[in-house]
Image 1 (cartoon, rainbow, N blue to C red):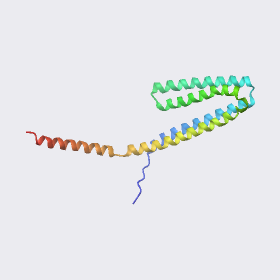
Image 2: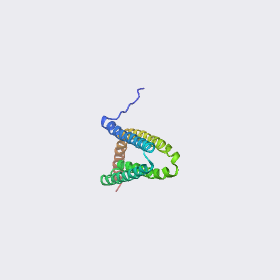
Image 3: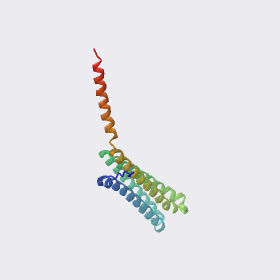
Image 4: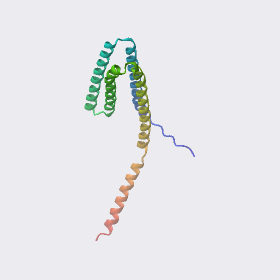
Length: 168
């Protein structure tokens, strides 16, 4: 017996790969952000570094608000999700200021571990998007819904015809 292979068309593959690529770019960008934060912690004096953290917090907050506004105007759920992720990064950056003051000797571990957490999140998100995209394509490819709908219409017409013959 020959196996049935269902492969999506190029447009579906391109759209899915574009979304996955954007997620992986976000993960790389966040890793670079935390890498530069770690470099700043090592090379910049304390007062300048805390000022930089405050500026980064404000910049991320502004970017988050802009993302939410654009997502709302375009009614785009994907942009809204990126906005939520950006908000989470904003909150982490704001808490890094407090962590820097209270856990100064252990601060270096935080910017080293956070990029891994974000990377794992984005990789898992990309895998879920890929699986859901393939399932959606296969579901849309199936014509069972149309066959059932036509069968129901035929059944209703036949039933109405039978009921009409017995009415006096």
